[in-house]
Length: 119
Image (cartoon, rainbow, N blue to C red; front, side):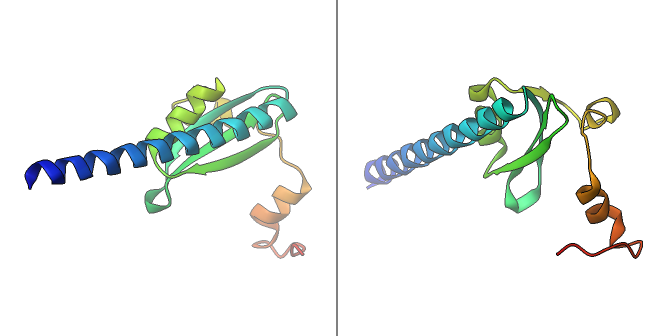
């Protein structure tokens, strides 16, 4: 009985591994596409609780975006597959590379300060 249980667990683990590999490959493809659109990219990975792990991307042109991976390990695998340079922290030097425009300023502060609402 114990052997059957171990075999069932091994099959479930292999299925989970395949799913994680597919998710990492899909995220790597999205990271590469972002990088191609923005002349290159750098990133930072941060655990965001039960929702998973956030991969913040900053392009060479200052464009930015993010992706969410189910686990930190999947996020790391995706970044590695994509050849993404990772930063330990989203510190001042890295944050200074982000270019924001009117949309971001309205969205981040305008609503709270009585600015125009976003449609």
